Amino acid sequence: MEVKIKNTVISIVQGDITRQETDAIANAANARLAGGGGVDGAIHRAGGPSIMEECRKIGGCPTGQAVITTGGNLKARYVIHTVGPIYKGGAAGEANLLKSAYLESLKLASARKLRSIAFPAISAGAYGYPLEEAAHIALKTSLDYIGGDTGIECIRFVLFDKKLYDIFCEELRRLL
Image 1: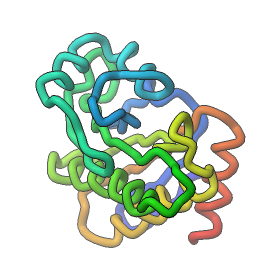
Image 2: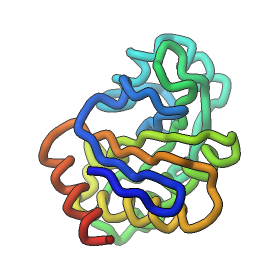
Image 3: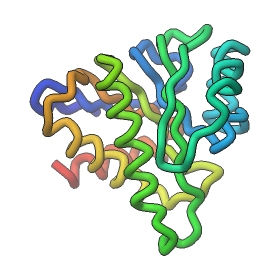
Image 4: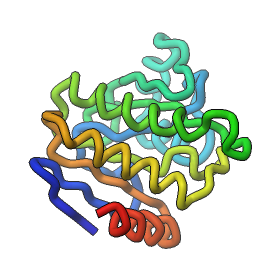
């Protein structure tokens, strides 16, 4: 699914984020930037050891924030590592932290004059965020962000399975 709003295309695809040819891919990282499972592990495996070396130099990233490294062996030139919240029922500020993770990633991409970024569904895997709410926050934050002059021409959501893809497509239709 793809829509164009102002100068930005928002697209939703099912696939492997490590194969995206965008300027940057976002990594659903942990606060220690220590690699891990899921998307984080896949990005580190595909990108090679140079990404981890840069992460060690950075040292960490608080929940809701974002940092950037080169893309190593990936097709993307950069990896924007962002830390989403672990879902604890919704009363611990998780929605604001998840929104911030997307927003800080988009701001970092704009600051670096990047034109395209691919996101996974941050916090929707091992961190247990409810899928529909995670999709809503991801898409609403992106739509709100492109209301300004961002320089970003493409925001792509790359979802690993059909269920998540369908949820994101349905949520985008609702928001439009």
